[in-house]
Image (cartoon, rainbow, N blue to C red):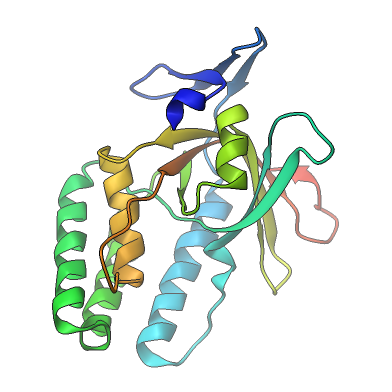
Length: 235
C-alpha cells in the first residue's frame, strides 16, 4: 500500500524531530516546524482519561469521552470535494521504553480472549488506570489506527497534513494541526497502539491486521473553546 504514497516525509533530526519536511512527487515541498502539545491540553487529556476509567470501574463520578474522540480532517487529490473528516479514536504514546508495556498489554489481551471479556474487565481497566497515573506521555504526538483503509487512508497517502478537532460537551475544544507519519505492521509503535486498542476491545475472532497506525506529530494547537480566547494559538 505504501508504494502509492505521493510524497516523502522526513522528520529531522531523526532522534528528536523538530521539523517535518514533505517532498511531493510533483516537485512541491513543505517544511513545517514541530511543537509540543501545550500543558493544558496534555493535562486535560490525562486527567479526563483517568476520570473516565474510574467511572468505568465504579459507575460513579464524572466522565467525558471527548478526549478519545477526535475529528480528523485530511486533504486528498484535487477534485470537487478533496476534504474528508472522520471520527477517530485518538490515543497518547508513552515516553521511553514502551515495548515492555506492549508485552504486558498483549498478555492481558490474551487472558481476556481465553477467560472472557467480562471476567477480565476490572483487571484491564486497572492496568489502564495505572498507565495514565504513572507513565509519562509523549507531548509531541497523538496516535490513531487506520481501521478501514478508505477515505482517510487515500488522503493521507496523498498529503500527510491533518487537523484533529476535540470538542467536549462541556464547551472545551482544541484543534491540533499535525503531520501524519504512517507506521506499518511490525513497528513497535504499531504493535503498542493496536495492543492498547485490543485491551479495551478484546478481539472475538482472529486478530485483524490494520493497514497502518498514524503517529501524528503536532505542529500547532489552537483553542477552539467558544469565548474570548476562541481561535487563539496555544502552541
